[in-house]
Length: 298
Image (cartoon, rainbow, N blue to C red; front, top):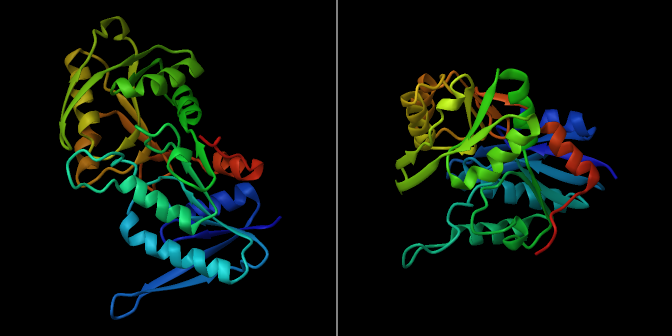
């Protein structure tokens, strides 16, 4: 069955790499604003009789989502057999419970909207916390891919004598799997969060590994506060200047400029376009699309 890969604006390069890896046709979604602020959407590609994969990493979900809905509906009206969302970064996973009276549990609402628009969802390392899987939240078939093996291989090929460091207890399994894959030690820090921009971190005694290069690994770099505090704590122990390897390079506001001096190098996957991108995901995603793999239903 033929597939058509369509890129939302800003996702053209990734869509091109994915289409090349998968061997699909590739098109794009043209968008602009009418004078009154409403959106114009036009598909460049022929959806009829094809499976359409809309490519959009959701780093700015509010302005992007209506465009996705318009593009998905247009693809269906133009004869697409199936319309899927490929979102290398999936937004609205943070608010997974009502922490204070009156709060919207936005993860549930966003999942309902996506599930009502698309036939399937594919993403990479969503920030699952209280949900065991995406299938516990989304009613459509989902595919959750993991970049840890790619991060591990990149570290093995580019960092001499690495020590894998997880920034908090939640990263134990993440850091451990990377370290195990390449046969190096790992350590996990203990984080206490006091707010969106305030964290404390306790670092165990790492003196036995001072001959190694610390590599902080994480799924998301957003405000950068956790990574910054961890880098300072490592320096206090006399460790080498650390490397940083993350999946999703959000780097909100001034996070990138604040973090750059603290690390020997910052590396990310191309899930979110950023100058730190060095690890490609196209082959990983193409393989999942080719195999048709989906998460088990809960």
